[in-house]
Each structure stands twice: as C-alpha cells, then as structure tokens.
View 1 (tube, helix red, strand yellow):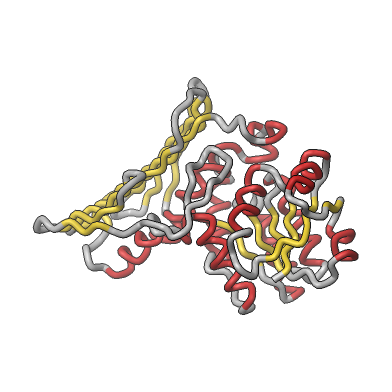
View 2: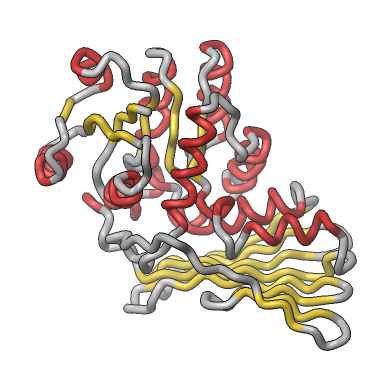
Length: 315
C-alpha cells in the first residue's frame, strides 16, 4: 500500500521507523509545512511536498495518508485527504472536539473511505487483555480500577505546540486519552465523571469515572522533573486482580494461582521520543495496514472515539 506521511516530527519519526520494518507499508513521501519537515524528509531520502495535491501529482496511486502532525492540524488534513478519495490513518486524538471528529466521520461515510485512529494501546499485549477479561466474566465483576500514566514535561515537541491548549488539548487529550480509550472500550461509557488539576509541578491531573457498581480512578501528568515515562494499571475483580506494573502483566487469582502473561514482542523499535523502545507502534501499524489492504473498518469504533472526546471536552 502506498502511504503519504503527513508530518515528520516526533510521532512522524515513530511511524516512519516502524513502517520501514513492515512489508507492504510503502511511504512514498512526506507532506509538511516548513523547513523542519523538509530537512527530516531529506535525511530519509523521501520526496517532500507542501500539500496533498502536489503529492498526488507525483504519486497518483497513493492509497492513504498517515497523519502525524500536531493535533490541531488533524481535522483539516483528514478532510482534505478524504475529499481526494484517500483513506486516513491518524494519530490520536483524531480531533480536539466531538464536532470536528463527527465531521471527519461523516465525510468519510459520504466518500466511502475509512478512518483508522491510531489508539496504540488497543494493539498492545499489555492492555488488550483488559477488555477480554472483563467480557469473559471468568473472574466476576469489576470491583475497582486504577490507571496511571506519567511523563517528564514533553520538551521534545517541535515548536512547543503541546503546551498550547488550543493546539494539543494538553494532558487530557494528549496523555490521559490513552487510558481513557481503554477505560471506555473495556467498561463502556461512564455514568459520571470528575477531575482535578494541579499546575504546581507541571500539569498533573486526577480523574474519577463512576460506573455505578464500581469506580475507575486515573492519574496523568507532565511533570517538570526528569522522571522516566511510566504507564501502569490495577483492576480488582471479584475473584482476582489484574496488574501491569510497566514491566510485568499478571493475574492474581482467587485461591493463590498467579497467571503470568507473555508481553514480549518480536520487534522492538526505538521511538526517539520520551517513550522507551517498544513493539507497540509496530503492532499497531501492521494491523492497520492489514485492515486497510483488506478494505476493512477500523477496530477502534467511531462511537468509542466520540465518547472519549465527549468526556475530554468536559475537562
């Protein structure tokens, strides 16, 4: 499949590095807005274009675009690509509002195109067991859940766009959205939502999602200290506890048995950002390419994306 990469900043480099190891994921060129993207494209011997139309003139057989630009540019690029009858792969969040995301989905439906939002945790061995465990009912009902996602302040972002709420949505839209996507896709839409924020240490948030019979607590923060990136969770069921401490995924079963999950990856690729080398993005893009080539819809439901964005808009 011929893919046009839009943006070659932090996440653009992540997508390029992983796509380069995937058979059939052929990045034909890069669309960008300035010298930074142009120079990064030149380093990789990739043709550089100022827009999608210019790229299509050079490569009329492009199948899809892969949008990895700053968030505030996602909507316009997605709508332009769809208007040119191209499918869309887009980094999370798809947009900064439910109205913008709805516009993208409606445009895609009208043109018969597909939209694949790159919610990377859906494709990981560390997080995909959550939904399966909940749906199986093997360990009974959920009693409580806690998620944590912490990072040093993202100074790596080109042009400091991440620190501008109108461009990134800050911690809720950029960092916490990962856990919220898993929360909504695993437990459904919450009945109630509350949050608190502190800017004394950077930008730290605490969230609580009410599901009636249980609550899900979460924290997320960009901290102005050199802490390593960390992502963990603990889910208490009636007959067991599922935990991921950032290194190991285990189910502690009632009765004393411990189930150790295999969360190793065949491919471990450096990200170049503040996330350690991982197989997450490789598995994500490989699966998206498979769906794209078979003309199948995304595994990330549009309704779930809209539910997540609707919650984030409250913060």
